Image 1 (cartoon, rainbow over the protein chains, first blue to last red):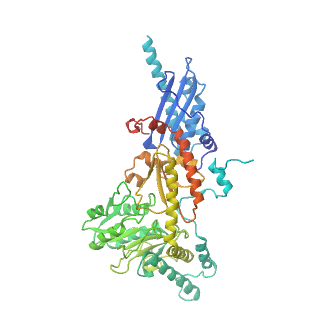
Image 2 (image 1 turned 60 degrees about the horizontal axis):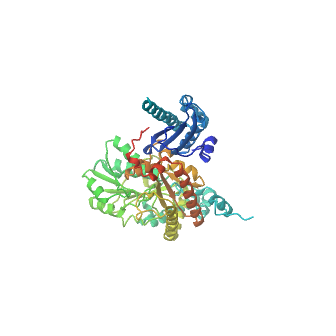
Length: 133
Length: 422
């Protein structure tokens, strides 16, 4: 399969590869996909008190398009508020990377990973607020 | 200024003048050996006759070349006579002709066929077609080592069984099947035995008489011959095997396969067989040593690398390995300097991982992580060393990027996690 230049660029030079401390209360972690399906994405965000994503990291098990989709996702959400980040659609990722139809699921997974990380962060924040009350 | 050329395997290889991408997909096809091409060329422009033309010298010389070719091919597989070779367009046609031809001819005798779950699609889909026509097919599974147990074949035999079809060697994991043992079983019961011998031809001992094989599918392009030419061995005595032709026309090939013969292709096919008769054993040893070198160099540097399929009953050039925690297509993209293939779903239109690996009971994630290296005649030690270094470097890079590898290293059992299938 021929990959688009942008997929290759992200695959060769992935942005924001890494890990954050999952236990840190300012960190939200999304783990989506399944090894049996051939792709797993873990996307992590560090959110400040203003609700802005200060940093994002990912690790992905998957094909070039999956790696590129997650790399792009981290790039896009950095500096956004969690509400803004939650509006990112898989179609935007697919369009930016010129993903062919068989690779659309990679962009779906990236959107899921963003939403899942935000959800995890919100859950932690809610639990913390409940404790403080 | 001196730089350390060994630091980056890519750079040092470019300096050394390797040709990229390095071809290690010899199960898919092989380049035509220059000696084969040289043998073929006169048959395009000078000896171009139709082998079926009986009225002039052009036809006679084409026919003589074809008959010589039959004898050479018969010799390579231990057949009694060149008359037992039916030329086809390739192994897919040979498989179709063997299975459908036998089923149609012998349907009054029985309607049961036995094959295995790891056969080539040409065999499996021919069987599926026959199921729609009222035949019953038993698909015998293989063990975790990718080998068929002859006892399972024996257990599947009924008084309605007319045909057993088991491949000589598997195209994905290179496992060499116990053809002689299965041949004993079928011969004792008067059941016709077909083998798709495409991958094993000239690479592992194969003798249709010693192994009691009745039908064998062969092709030229896996043995450094041209594409578009193959053959079906059809036993003529003890027992004489009959087929219903699947192609109607001029009644060529003793009525088994109509169509003007591809004379240059057939001459090339025979030349490829001749080379294997002379050099096959030595070549297998050389390729096996290269394959083992590649395997050892990779496993020396990387953990969690699993060989798929039996180590002992295996084609010399086959190395099918799963790199745990790394996805096959992602890895192939990283090692694009090497032409290989993967059992990963992402490489197929169906998005299903390899049915051969699944039949062996491999977990789906391991099937997704598999890469098939197929070494052949023209690979060199230098290429192997380059590929090993490249694979090691890229697997390490992708594992650094893999959440699964990180979890594995942290001692988390990946099976304990509730994954959301998608």
